[in-house]
Image 1 (cartoon, rainbow, N blue to C red):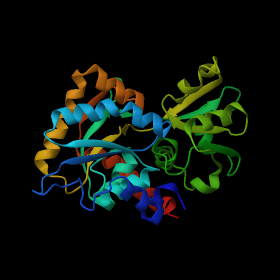
Image 2: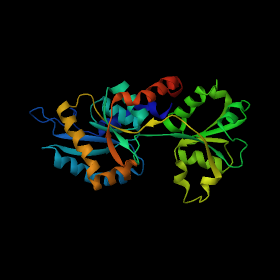
Image 3: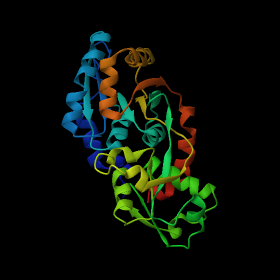
Image 4: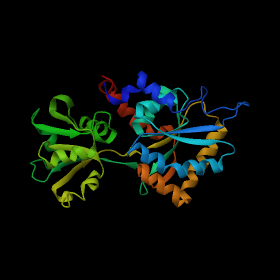
Length: 303
């Protein structure tokens, strides 16, 4: 069972519910007003480090919200975060593109904001080969004999690692993704590139430019590993709200988050946790391309 599909399991449900001890969402007080908000994160680093890093963000939100406490919860995975938003025990979810699309479908969450990274509200996936490879273009990949090439990527739920590259290959005329390659799922973008360096794969797909993560260890990596193709732009990660969070409160939260753009400390926190360099307003329609790609591979993801 794929990682994304764990959201319906008892483990994910308990993880989500444990994040907020109240029976009612958001810690409602006697007057029915929300007096507690829970933010859901998934580890991009050690869970304890995230909790410590975002403490000033909790304090900042509390200072701008009247009589509402804010708590950050580091979930086990995105499935638990989606489930937490479905059960209304997580109020604010920091969700990646695919995670948002799934959360909207399963939990009717509302996207409000998205990441800006170095001036862009989207990013690309890249096709990478070793400099010693006979592959010089995507045409060489498409024209290879079935089973001749080994393709390394994080996993089949990775937007930049698999879904967008696979969709791009199909759009370019490849009929059978599964038969054309030997597939090597390696659990992360760095590992996919390492497979190329180790000679264990012929092709790797990652976000642009994942080579940066290995540059300290491999100083010549930009020459050793060559990018031969890019996908269509992928919209950045989101800040989304659970479906029943009052509109007046979501508007207030959105204004506070947008105010991070003028607060060096808050942006530094966002960059430390998820490499955000700014916060932008977002609409559900911004993620149509992710939604279409997800639908294309939904059966494969949910095997």
